[in-house]
Image (cartoon, rainbow, N blue to C red; front, side, top):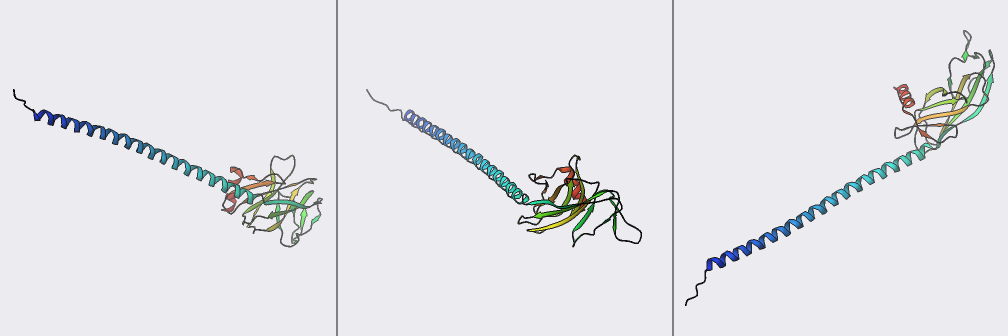
Length: 216
């Protein structure tokens, strides 16, 4: 009896074994690649979320810093005087600015004196900029309790840090209580408003557009 080895069959088995090992290796490599891709995607998502959080925190911090400066701008009533119809209104002291609501004064031909056109109230308003930033332009006005809005708006500015401006407001009628209102643009271009000692607030779009149109 003779023993015949069929080497072709052994070679086929070896080839098959190598092919199986190659397939397993390829599967493991693919699995590792998928895990790596998943990890990379998770890392990318985490990076995007971190950037978004950073941007949000930066914007919130900027708003806080801007509002902190805006809170240091306010106006106060220094004095209120009443003039009756026909009385001469005293000229302003120094270089304080004068604004009129409606038509509360008149003048005689050839004279520079202002005459009360009916009973009028003359209010001295001091606008304070105690922030460390330039503001301007700013709008000064007074609020009459019971009215729907502010009166006697006039535009001025700029106002340097740590300085103030005296504004003389002349309104028709006699008023026991007038509340100063100031609206202003800060150094970053944002508009704010404050009435009396109320908290400062972003200026509404309608008034902001009105004031910006006055500056053009």
